[in-house]
Length: 295
Image 1: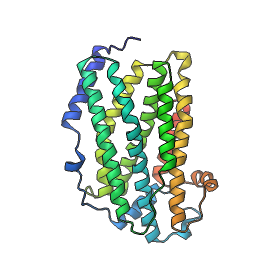
Image 2: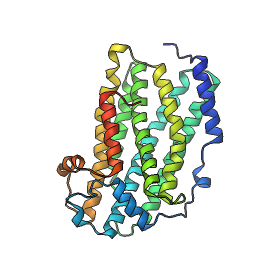
Image 3: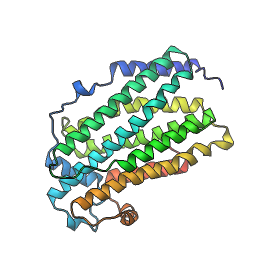
Image 4: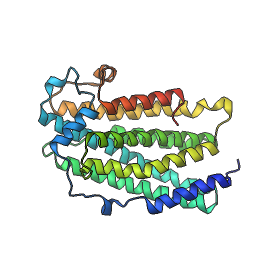
């Protein structure tokens, strides 16, 4: 397969390179690591994000527990995002073999740099949040780490280059859209621009919008033959469901730390009756992935 990008694509890559130079961020400089998110803001995040909002379990919560659960929930998604970046980064360097064009090469380097920044930013943000929860247990990491490790190992073993690229970048697109929705919902929940949680998601979204444009460009280049376009989606869907289960499993675990008797077998009912806008956004994303309309 000829991986030479046409001039139109190289122009898009040149624009993405300018964006990475002029509209990006450095976590140590651009984030106020001494900033905070108030209890009132965490309560708003609880209403926007939690499966438990206005559910039959609401009676188990008071405002103190809602704040703690919202902290767990933010730390949980940031931990998952960090681990995704961690296990993806080694694969990204292999993209350099696809095309020698300077525009492509430069953007792959920017992509790797930005994902490395995101990894350290999300882990540090996770640590900052958990530091405000003295006496509470740390979130489990094992299932998340195992599922992501095995997904990326599986991608490496796919022998067909087109299918490998499509699978990898469809998964990237799904996760990146989740974090874009996290940014949009945190912005709706928290009007204060310098709130710590809002800063993290908002700065991350600056890079992710460029990454989504790159995802589309490279997936268009590696498009599957018409009759086989179902294959990447069929591969990615179970892994996306497994990762979603890991994130939700940790949320149920977090609720139990606060005395809420919620278990994995209660998840279906909670999802069916969910009212929090962020969860509803995620259900739309998952349906888009299932239907093949995640674009």
